[in-house]
Length: 311
Image 1 (spheres, helix red, strand yellow):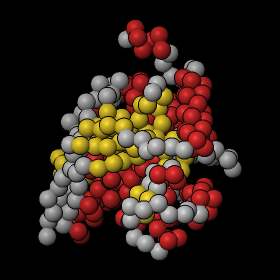
Image 2 (image 1 turned 180 degrees about the vertical axis):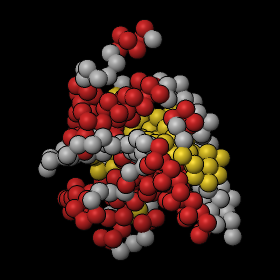
Image 3 (image 1 turned 135 degrees about the vertical axis):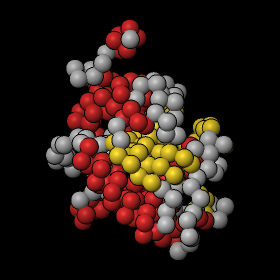
Image 4 (image 1 turned 60 degrees about the vertical axis):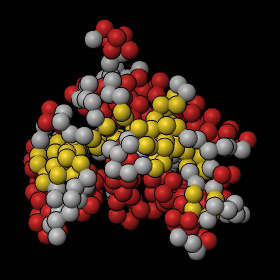
């Protein structure tokens, strides 16, 4: 039986592993009527659209996928950016940050092409906190979010639920700051069935630290988890339902993962109370991301602040 789609059109930039997972997730969820796919080549976009059309036929999804150009995304209610430059990541620590120099020019080109876009932009490309800020400041789009802390928080709640043998819905807690080595587990405000409980904090931190690497080692890279985080964020940002999402967004002059309470699509920051150790970690994450962003903005491939003001 055909389902009713939540929104009219979503754009997707990137037909790689994560882009494919996002497209599949939106199709099986019956989230939108149209999915416009843009990729590095027209052949990639056309192939993914055809594959999703096959899924639509088999599942009676209302979603129709179409290949398109960046210019075709202007009438979409949201655009998901899931591009990745070709580079070899050899880091063992700060793994996500390794993509900054390689991915920044690609994000810069997309920002120029989508400058002034009025819908919601969800950035998946790593390092997601830095890439989301870069896209927002170069494109001047007003509704840009990174999905990293959303995935971290989901993993945290699931890991704690497994440890305590309770449903994940019983756990309320956040991971904020950087989507990376400087992630902050908000243990002091975490509750299970609305009660504070002793937490195996180091065990949870270790699980979060190794989970992405374990997935990548087995299947090449994470894909389904990020796609799920995208779907959840789209539901909130496009006013399908209200609730809290941990997304990368502007905060006190920086840009990092924070909980946002969405009401009819409009976000308000709602950080939990942090104990002294968590506050130090949050400040360190903020400093790290500001420093990384400033270093990135000096790349010759990106526009200078002066050229942005003059344009």
